[in-house]
Length: 401
Image (tube, rainbow, N blue to C red):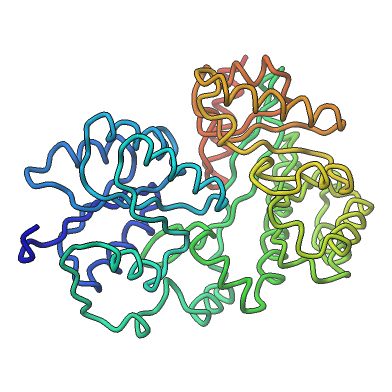
């Protein structure tokens, strides 16, 4: 390669903030030609429209519509010859499996990037390449995404906004509940998902206030919906960094009791892969949370490491099957086998089984046929602000009838 030729990079991610942030880091590292695409279709178009080759593709794995695995299949079929970096926050073993798949397809995978991306991790990737890289900034001096003080100020200024994604009954298609999803309403970047800042919150002692605030806002919104005659329940994500407090059940009970919402209408979602840090303590706290009347959901089931032990001991009421085991299951026999087995396992334990990440009619019909209880995903609806959800629900119920 001509050393005078500038490195050309395409960043593919459905998160607008992440696109801008990674582009910024690349430019700090001396990469002047950075292309971006917000979905797989746009990425394919960007590659096909270039006269000069794209030297490096940084590809997100989890995207609505065409996911990263499908995108990699397409570019492999088109004989893409540039280097590839896989970019995701999925479990390390799953990311490694996707890396092996891309290599088997003939793609030149040079590494992986975990989210949130740092200057150091991106520098390490670029240093592997025999490409002209010139650092324009000392990486230690570049602020990593957001600093703790900026996030602290955002929490104090009440800049955390909730989005709501509905779940429907697989049998009746009635909207049964909503998952409450926190977003930081940033003055520059718009709505930012917690993936980009939650680790800083956890590492700096802010997670308890953050989670309690999200729970209180979620319950307040449910209170309004119940007063308006909507028969709904809610689910709220809980960080495992909270499980170092034995008084957590009382904290969450108090957050709900400030409203008129029955505590039984609130389910707390716990990510499976993070339950093993102190199993006995987690079991103690979660059992007492269940005793208070909360529902408990094991989120992202199948992506962790102790599934059977978790189901045996933990007092869960719901199992949520991760999208990676549902996406395109109607066309992929292996995925269908895993999906069907997971649903049967959940039902055998007497749990409410939710399949998330449903994005097309075929998969929606399949999970219903396989016996799941509730369905969630972009095929039903994307996350929305409260007012948008109310309008969507009204239209949905009219069309359902």
